[in-house]
Image (cartoon, rainbow, N blue to C red; front, side, top):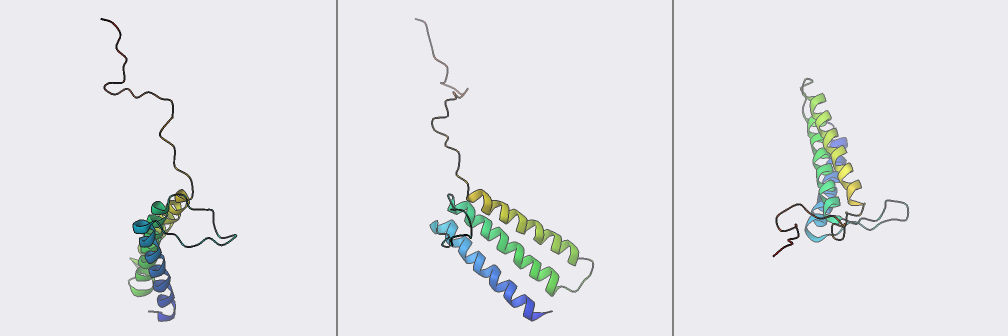
Length: 119
């Protein structure tokens, strides 16, 4: 195991996980630098993205740096990469505004939406 590579990876993943938990529970995201990222409009979704990315990073450290079986290491790295990409996509979705469901102008076809006429 390469400790000098595992320790920074674990520390970075824990920092992202702590920030993700703060985003989910309190709606807090790290402050935005001038060229860092767009403003976050949905902090809870952004926090879930950070948490998924951190979990993927921890899996990467476990599978690539800790385990020595050459048959399972590529699959673990592939799985952790998929988790990391999913987290990045969730963080990107948190930067966009959600749809405004009120005032869409559509009428639902559920019970009570039809207008009665007659006696």
